[in-house]
Length: 123
Image (cartoon, rainbow, N blue to C red):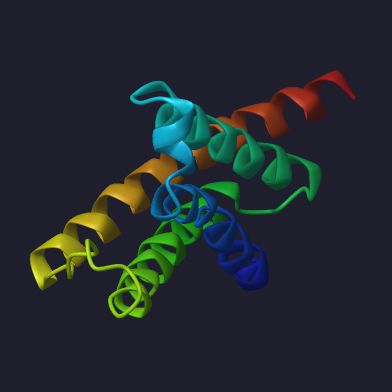
């Protein structure tokens, strides 16, 4: 299990909320820009998991999803004093973020695992 990789990928996911906080996603046009940002982050996660040949891609990307949720909640707390529109995320919201992003990471991990398996079969 590559803990540093999971945390790093979770941090990469922060690109989306940061772009949102600074109005970039609004300027690029909703709903497509947030979806495109999410898709791009998902592709990065899968590509990195495959490229680094992580031995447990499902676990690594599941934990990357959990790391993202924790980091996003912390980013929200840190943004409170600087962004008047920032709303605090309550415990149910954080629990939902943890669950949803863990599932999302697991799905991406299964995709990475499948790609790794296909690459091994072709070698």
